[in-house]
View 1 (spheres, rainbow, N blue to C red):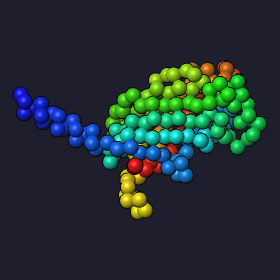
View 2: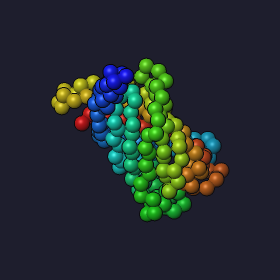
View 3: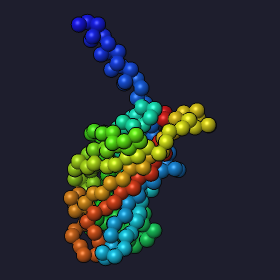
View 4: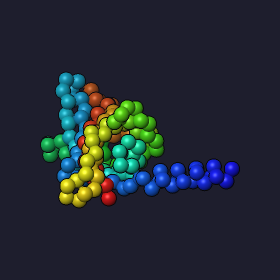
Length: 186
C-alpha cells in the first residue's frame, strides 16, 4: 500500500512540475470580436489592452487561463461608436473597467484542439462560458530559447446575458469572439 501511495505521489508531483507559466506576447496577440449590425452586416473590433497568463505544460493542451481586459480599450475603428460602447449604455467603463475570464475546466477534443470552460465576468455579471481552443503549434524561440505557443480561441456569447446594452433591432445579441494568442513560456 505504501509503495502505491509513493507511486501516486511521484506521478502527481511530476505532472505538477511539468506545468509552467505562460504570458501573452501582446505584439503578436489580439482579442477580437464581431457582432451583426442591422441584420445584414458585421462590425468587428478588438480590445487593445489586456493581460493574459496561463499555466500549461510544454504541449499547451491543458491550459488554465487568467485573463483581464481593459474595457475602455475597445476599438472598432470608429471613435463615435467606441465612445458609445464605453458609455453606460454598453460597457459602462467607469463602473466596470475590466472584464475577466478564469478557466474552470478543459476537455481535449482532438490532437490539437480543446474546449475550455471558465467564468467570464462582464459588466459585473459572471457566467460560465465554453470556448473552443486550437493549438497552432509550439516552438522554441530562437532568441529566448523558451517555448512559444500559438493558439486560436473562439466562441460566442450573448451580450444581453451580461447586461451589455439592451435588445435592439440595430445590433445582434450574439457576439463572436476570436482570440489569437502567441504565448511565451516564462
